[in-house]
Image 1 (tube, rainbow, N blue to C red):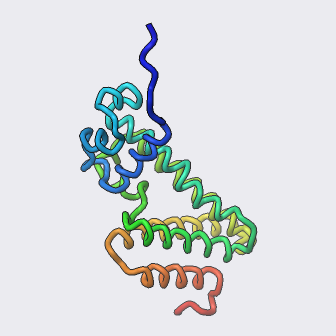
Image 2 (image 1 turned 90 degrees about the vertical axis):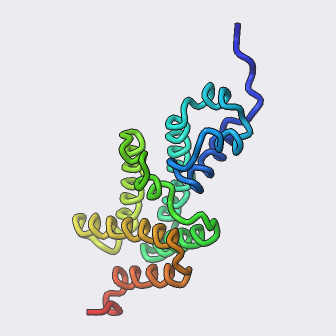
Image 3 (image 1 turned 135 degrees about the vertical axis):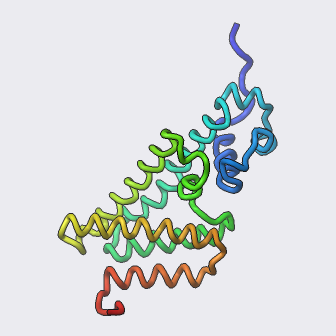
Amino acid sequence: MPGRPKHFDESQALDQAMELFWAKGYDCTSISDLETTLGLGRQSIYNTFGDKRSLFLQAFNHYAQTRSGAMVALLKAPGTAAQRIDRFFTALIEAQCRDKRSGCLLANSVSSSIQSDPEAAAIVDRALKRLHQALADALAETIPDASERKKTAWLLVNTAQGLCVLSKSGQAENTLTGIRTQTLALIFKPELSTP
């Protein structure tokens, strides 16, 4: 006998779970929190997504594919390397300041107990490497040497994650914008950098 049909949108529930994990963190999110936010009973959650860890991994992967993916897409849009990377950092800062949740779900999760989960670690690794590759590709016209380009791209990945952490700690938007401006000046206008 087939199971009862589901009367909810799984994609929407996954998005809601992602938002909850993003806002509260993995460790502070309970099954009861998920029931309330998703408007589903515990058994429905278990039947559809599995346990808390399984739901988190699905939500985490959803974030990496959608939110993080949209940021990476900015680096592939038309424009010079400086314009594309500036758009990326501007959008990142605006999102951090607008959402008031502050932080990046990827970075936030690294500092939680889920960090020891190999599947979560693999999602983080893939997302960071995808960002790194997009930044390296954007830098190709500016930095011909592949080794230097890769190092600079990792510096920019680090800057992006650092901006998320600083935003989460409550730093003002003008502080984040100043970091963006100085970073771009160091890479694209070396004559403006401080010796």
